Image 1 (spheres, rainbow, N blue to C red):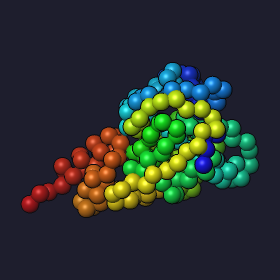
Image 2 (cartoon, helix red, strand yellow; image 1 turned 30 degrees about the horizontal axis):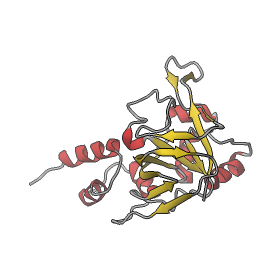
Image 3 (cartoon, rainbow, N blue to C red; image 1 turned 30 degrees about the vertical axis):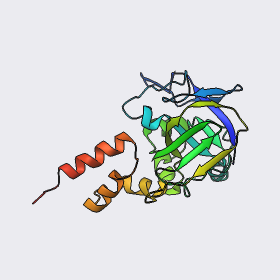
Image 4 (cartoon, one colour; image 1 turned 120 degrees about the vertical axis):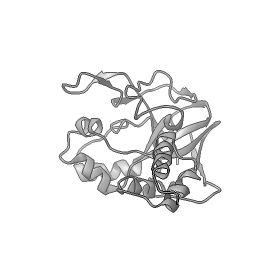
Length: 212
């Protein structure tokens, strides 16, 4: 498994929206130095839902891209889905929360699945895109940066499985759409190194439950 593209975006307008978005990522030729907040000079406009140390980088795999190329019948160059790193054999259905990805000296930790939003749908301009993306269960992964450093296209990528309980990224993706998760499931997630946005949501759900 290797790094096939490094993608970075500027703040741009999408359609008639007043606010700008950083979803338009384009491959860059040179290597970059990964930091705790991701790729330097990569635009993150909606900081309520995107970016931050726990979701510093979004990764998508060529295997999942190949599925969408067949499904949509069109070219999808690296960066189309707004990912920072495109990786040759990365598969959403195999990775789990807490898994480590090693790229040279850089260590990333899987923290969350990508949840499709209206910005993503408008960028793709495909009918029922959010529903189709959900049904396909190929969300890609967000990662936090445990160890930064230089990376370049062609670098080998290896996976170190999480040493604790394994919960697949696809399972977390499915559970996002459940109206309510039971206490045991919420505590199960809270014991994992999930992203802060999910952690805050699950903690709030537990806090609202009766304790008697």
